[in-house]
Image (tube, rainbow, N blue to C red; front, top):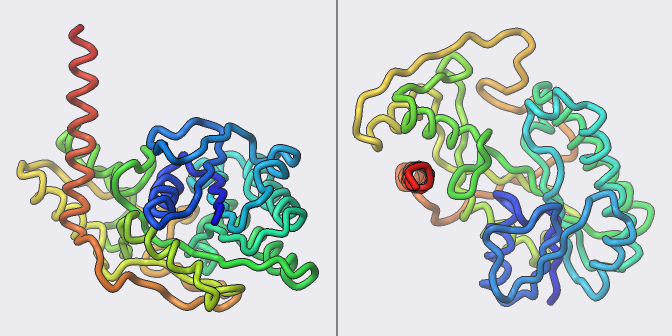
Length: 298
């Protein structure tokens, strides 16, 4: 079976591509930048999400398309509303057109738990719009889909703005965590490897034309997370909390407010423990610091 992973060079996309390869799928990664984690059996195509002709070409003889590309940082989306619409909404529509033309079996779309919320600003609005387009394409043209609404992802390869990575990096580099909130905010963390495995399991036919929320079973407040990071690193550092302003775009206790199409919740039966996962992030950042310091002394 041939699978195209759009946005496969990124954090979640690269892990999904690896999981697909491990399960025997022929994987093509489509992204604007080459993947740092490309495996020998995987094919890399450099292309833009808005390039209809290139997407048409890449979807030939493809059975499944994972669409993970777009602006995923809430802060970036807030500062770039027009670019967010172009990438997350128009880009998704172009992907849908190409998928329909290629007669793929199913589109798997990476959405977010923020679609339930009044928070998330333009990022949330763009994901809600994309989901609506996906559902209407199925109603009008019969294009099958599965929508996956991811919660708080963490783990190796995360972007600099990823919440948990950002706090670990502050602790390792600056001996301080500046938490953007009160410390009472709660998150259901899911390791990216666990999320990737669940993302492949939904290729079973029983998941067609349904929405699923993918979160972890380990729920921590910001204060509890900060204390856990301090204990794992094994050295003292300060923890500071800033008050949330009225315009803050992240949810506090729960994302659930606005209710789009109902989604069933998926959590892994077995999962990577949060403490072990944080240790992975600590080791990754420490290795990066060592490599950078070695380069600077040459």
